[in-house]
Image (cartoon, rainbow, N blue to C red; front, side, top):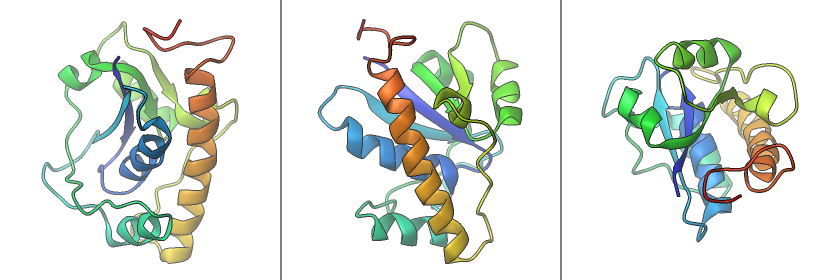
Length: 154
């Protein structure tokens, strides 16, 4: 079974939070949730706000280190979910044949997920709540919705 790859800009806020939230739900399924950034500097920690709000939700990002998205990451992913439509366009430009969607659109909604970077904890909490809701909806679809199925789950 492949990975579900979450992609944002710096890989310090949104995509690590989304991957952690998805990982909790995917535990024991054989599917891994991973994250990368389009503009990431390899090796950076999760932002302090992301660390705090994930801890409040019972998840740890302490071991997270940012990683730049590479074409090989796309080849290992069964599904790629970006935080914005613009990021979807950038990922799609890296190659064809990948299943790439903006997270909100894949979850059946419109809009982008705003970057909480440099925001206060209230901004991070709002982002985490939105990610939790959208990740749950996206996983419902990916794991057995009538219009989509991850490879190996048909």
